[in-house]
Length: 217
Ligand code: DX5
Ligand code: ZN
Image (cartoon, rainbow, N blue to C red):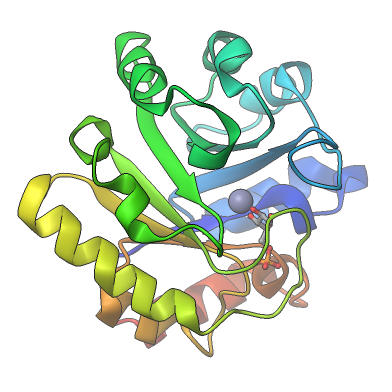
C-alpha cells in the first residue's frame, strides 16, 4: 500500500495538535518534517526541540527531511528528538555514504534526497546504503509549488536502479504532489507520497487524505 506522508510545512502551527490528529484520522502513515536552515534552502523552519515536542503528540512515523548544509553535524540530535527516518540531501555533504551508514547505526531509516537538478545516476555509488531515495519534484524550500513533470521520469529511473541494486529501498516523491498526479507517481514506481498544501490547504485534511487513498486503490 502506498505510504501517505503529509508534510507539516503547510500545517497551521497555532493548532498543530488538531492538524496532526486530523491527518492521523485520515490514515496518514508518516508525518513528514521539513527541516530548513536558510542556507541549503532560502527558508527556515524548525529544529530538534520542536520535533521533540511534536513527538509527544503522535505515534506516527516521523519522517525528517533535512534541507540543511552539513547534515552530519545534526543527525544525532534529530534521532534523539524522535525521528524514525532521516533523509538528507546528496548535494549538502561530500560524504553521503558515510552518513547513510551512520544513520542506520543510530537506528534511523537512512534516506537520501536529490534536487531537480541532480540526476538519478548520482545515486549509483550509494544506493546499497539507502533505505529510501527521495526524488524532489520541486526545488526545495517552500510548499505550494508546481510539480516539475520531469520528476515522473526520474521516479522511473530510480525504480530501475533500485530494482537492480537494492530492491528493499523505497522511493519517496516530494513537491507539488496531490490528487491530480498521485496515481501517475505510484505507477511510475513511487512508494511514498509527501503532500503539504494538497492536504493542509484542503478544507478537511482527513477527507482529502482518504480521497487520495481511494484514487490509488
Ligand atoms: C519543500 C518540502 C516539501 C513541502 C511540499 O521543500 O520538502 O515537503 O512541504 O509541499 P507541497 O506538497 O505543497 O509541494
Ligand atoms: Zn519535504
